[in-house]
Amino acid sequence: MQQTDVSKDGENMSGLDTKTDYELVRESCSGNQEAFAELIGRYKNLVYSVVLRMVNDPEDANDLAQEVFLKIYRNLDKYSPSFQFSTWVIRIATNTVIDFRRKKRMDMVSMEDLSVEPVGENSPEDAVGRKERQKQLKAAIDALPEMYRLPILLYHLEGMSYQEISKALKIPLSKVKNRIFRGRKLLRENLFGGQEGEKNDL
Amino acid sequence: MTCKQAERLMMRYLDAEMTQEEAKWLHRHLDQCSSCKELFLQYDALAQMLEEQEHPQAPEGFEEAILAQVAVLPVPERKWWFVRPNWLKRLMGGLFAFCLLIGSLLVRYREILLAELSDHPIFGSMGGSLAVLIQQFNTETSYVLDLLDQTFRVADAYLQSLAVPFALALGGICLLQVILLRKK
Image (cartoon, rainbow over all chains, first blue to last red; front, side, top):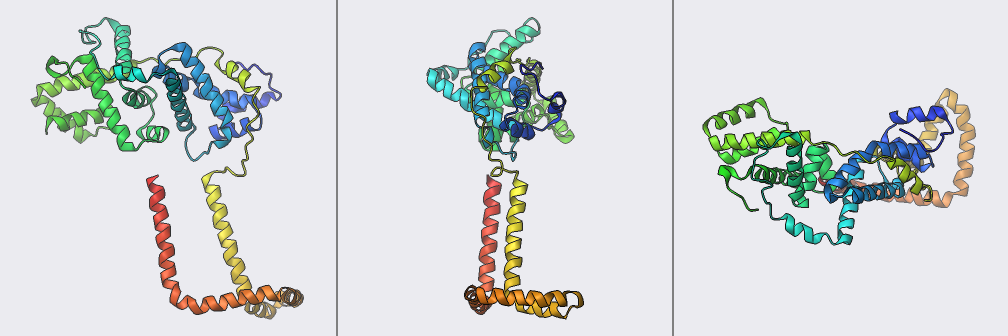
């Protein structure tokens, strides 16, 4: 990872990747920029992919992801190691996206989300190749209402556990499970049609 | 097994938490129920597609862009003596309570302790000078000590009758805290 600053102590740099998130947070608070850069490096892809999947526009996602890390920086002193850093990061990221949508008046979009149209007439097995399947899956995920999309992508695409999602979104565990189950059902119906080839409304 | 139960088991499969037993049950149902079999194949395909999904990478120069903006911000002042790991907070709370207990016991039983100490061969001589100090301390702070002694006497009097309900109330509060914190 390239650093823009020349580190004052070369030995310090190599030790950074073995430090825990909490240690990096404390060092960042002492003004150690390399420590904060290491933290960014560890979580930038997580934040970017979650945000991208929620807003779907790479430019917006980039801006939002940066804003997330700025928020993290400003609130570093509020982080407590009693929960995982990733949980805290996800919480800030989802709140940032919600604020962004509110400002952009994206509330109307969620009404459209409610009608889950089958993406294509063909089932993905008919479709040619992996790329096509990925495109269809992406469209199906985008079509999910945000309430289901977020837990699904956190669980299946970011590999978080039910517990972590529950803590990050401040939702009880049972709700997380229900939303994931419901999300899976909707995805399946969208991609493969209902059972016996029927179209299912929500 | 109903089809609804079967679908719930399929969810366990997607969680990668299915036990051998559950796998057997599901398999048996799928052998008999063709619509559930179709359903399962669809869920399996969905799981594969989800696994195949590529992970978007943050664009190049991400860290640099952020660090540039961070440079103009004030360094977050971490009052880290306020924010500590939980175990440290608990330890300090416990230590404080412990010292308070020991301190009050020492004050309460200081005369008995001193009497015991003066008998002891090594501490006896020390105890002598200590006794002088204690005398001085007594005279200078007699008012406070009298108050304390009075409190202890009153407490002793009531302790007999109040001890049990007090202990129960304390225990109840502790239990409540544990329950409330668990829920959180």
